[in-house]
Image 1 (cartoon, helix red, strand yellow):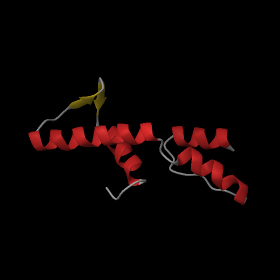
Image 2 (cartoon, rainbow, N blue to C red):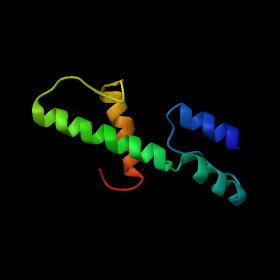
Image 3 (cartoon, rainbow, N blue to C red):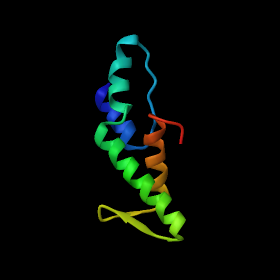
Image 4 (cartoon, rainbow, N blue to C red):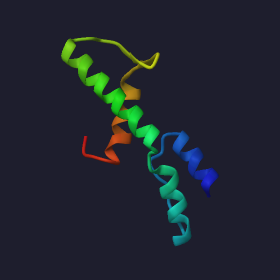
Length: 84
């Protein structure tokens, strides 16, 4: 179950169906963002908001080019902890 959940997360899925209550903890563990993922998402989101204010068309964070797909992923991570 954990391997399948990790594969689903890597493909961009936001969750996985459970057919037994014992599976819920594993699914929650895999799909709940880690502190590292949350910090990355905050950094990307902040950089994106700053770029918009400054009128920039392209940005990078930690030497990673940030495009709309990356920003969407960051927003999705942050949606677990707030309403963005």
